[in-house]
Length: 203
Image (cartoon, rainbow, N blue to C red; front, side, top):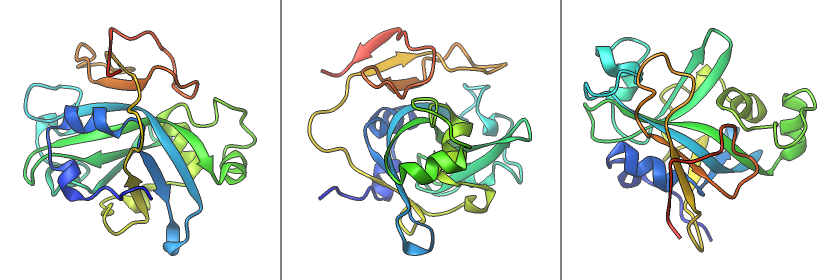
């Protein structure tokens, strides 16, 4: 049985958590009933310590970013361009600003429901982007601040051999694109473009 990831997993440097999230399972269980499970295949780290202008908390705490400064293991969701919901999990110690953006997932359970939510989108475009995966999973702003130890979103640890992880610069930012904080499973067809890594870590 896969182990559920608890707060100590997220209470670590953001970049390390981001690498270790690749290959984990993300479960959505609204009202305690599991409706979907996916495998995380692409993420980006965002560190609001003054060195990362791409992070939402770079300029300090605001009503929107307050959860990023709180305890690790909480959900940070926001709207991108007023249209797409993006899913993040908060990392590092309480008072520090850091979170990992979930960029792409591989559907494992509840696939037909995800396809309906996405208007019949075909694989692998079903969930190979941050806005696509939240639409597929039915994740909205109501999950802002949710605790992964309590649900309805939670993560299950990897089992078996760790994936080969590609490292690249982040995507679609006006600032902070130079940071190599994007990590993805180089062998997964569910990863969004671009797929050429700067380096590969792991086996």
